[in-house]
Length: 490
Image 1 (spheres, rainbow, N blue to C red):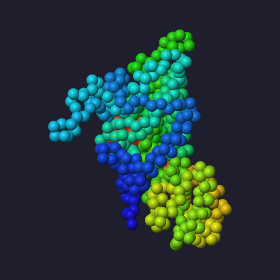
Image 2 (image 1 turned 90 degrees about the vertical axis):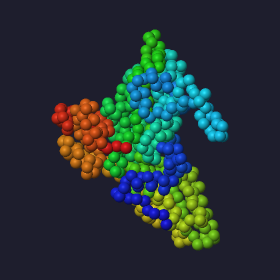
Image 3 (image 1 turned 30 degrees about the vertical axis):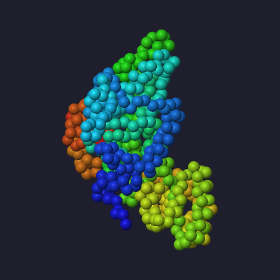
Image 4 (image 1 turned 60 degrees about the horizontal axis):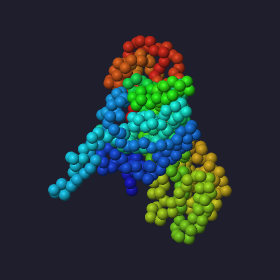
């Protein structure tokens, strides 16, 4: 029998790593720092992708695709941007291999590129170089593009889904005629992410702006959503950046206004990544395994037969197949696991590990009594349900489970958010239980860095609509008009 997962209380980090592997989500690859996303894990990403893609298109965006390779010279055009990513870039220097005298493959020194290519860490530079060809007049605006892609950021310490050298994401890049339109777009998209987190991931988030030191390289303002994981650490679940005219000026992207004046366009960018799968795991799961919100579960209902012979299986399968057909017509994903190579007890534990929201079991007695045994994964509550009521019960329960998972996460977040007025109290909270800390600070990078260096806690966000509250900085005692959100973070 397979060993139980390490408990969250015993070792949260080990629990997470074991769960990702044991639930068949992902595994480390032979390429250092990169992961293989296994079919079950990728199917969760596909659910995230399709749901978000619809939300993007509902807000007027279209998908495009831009090159993986970016000429090094493009990065030189926006100084703050390249400075922010320089240490994470993978560089292509040659374009050909050759066989040496011993039959070994080596890089052909004669095939050195005239200009090195950067494997994209993000696409602002290549996209804005392209937009220069697309945008000439106010009639060409706005440009509302998104791309689903992979990126590479060379990481020294990696963790499946949370931080890997290569990961999957989407990145929106938009161009606008006015500053006001660009800011409106930036805020619109962070709200789309917050809505997705609430309605699909079942994760409550705080919307805010980043401090100057945490802001995206090349942005004038970065909006973010921050979520609290079960170990009390914060996870940045999405960002949206107001880029002002920085990239338009760097790449000379101008347009003719209605008044026949030439002006630089205004820009935004925004994105989320496969890190959301990590958020899903850490926000909801327990020591039995995954707990997936039904809207993102690859399998919403699993049915397991219990039988003694082929005749019983044949009889049971007829009823199961009828139910499966009806559920599929309702767009409810269902799996009938009638494999005879695994016992029912193994299957029960396996689907608990994989976080399937609803499990049905049916044996000879259930068949004769016209009933099903139903277990919901979020509470492990077991019920006997009449066959005539099973479809309505499943339909209702999927909604109820989604809502319950969110409320549980919201209760955890609220009970682990603490207001402090002194630095001693600040450090005490971090030492005892972590979580979100609401505190006053004087708005300076110096104070922010002092807190970060001494406690490893950072300003996760400045709430987008801060409640006005006069106070004093917990470090300097200088006046502060509102609290900001601190936490240790992934």
